[in-house]
Image (cartoon, rainbow, N blue to C red):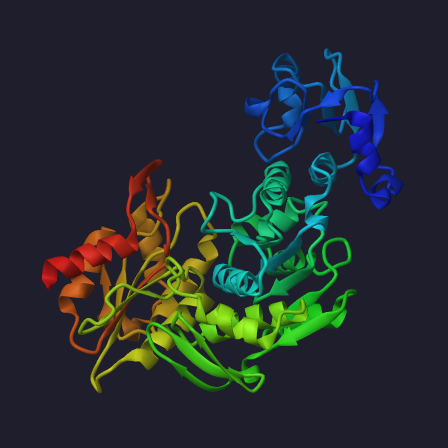
Length: 476
């Protein structure tokens, strides 16, 4: 709890200098929380009137005051209320700084590393978390595996960081989505390092253009957010960021690893003259391990702690997860839901085949109410498999068959003979497993760790790994 005056006094001087803040009313009021959700307002809260695509928070200001809000953060003054209003040009941006100030800037007292990129964020973050833990830091990892959103809204994010600080956490690794950057969810954050994995085709339903998508990702690598950039130099967009960054840059690339060996459950390679073993398979995960290792080393972690940390990495739910270890054929569950990720997973799967005539079968779909422009590209990417089964992913409010048709349209005519359409995801997985031969690799792609499937507005229990294990048990 603090007075509004105390909170505003803690806001970064650079933000105040922007002229973003004008106070209408007294600052001598107690603030107990900062929130943008009128449903969570409690007595003494500062309610932030965020404008969205469908709703405007200003329309809920009166309700928030009736619920006990003691101050409002607004872009235009709201009539009919008798509480202090802080008028700003951009509530979303200001909300991040105010929330950080209210919680006394927890990111400044923690070693916070942000990981962004189209693919590999979760795996890289989990690996880096394991390394920092091994180095003696009390570490928490946040992202796709821990919340409904990859990166929460600023009030929740700052509240969570403050809670971690209170628990004695010393380091946080967090995934930073392009949505979060575009919507200013990390405004007010100070990262010790920011990691860029890659940029591919995704989220154009939100960003509209690839340039806007890239700009959102690139914005993390500025002094506003971080003091160090850790960049994948093998990615063309990574090189663009490295060339234009106004903070110190450290790069990593695949050629940092030598003597690479990979199987379904682990990867081994030599890095900085030291042998490294990581308990997750897939050739593409070597680059994720290098991202984590380079970031950790740049923060002062010893090579021995990096090696020990990566050795401690085991199963990461839905990330090249082999659910039939020791079986006659491999069944890999992976979150790959972009064309680039699917190509990478299938390339790794081909390398795992353990018999001369073994095949790779892919089972996948595309999410509904999401970027439709990538569906045909996903179909084209799937042709790297010997057998293709196109099925439902999370159709949400769209027709599953319509989504499948858009995917199949991207599969060249010459490849259609090896393509099967099965709308029911369970049946699609069952067909793949029933048809498998010794040495084959089945890739179940797109949903990864998710335990609920969104169909026609309903959330239905469906865990790819659990269903695959059940089907494998039924056929053994």
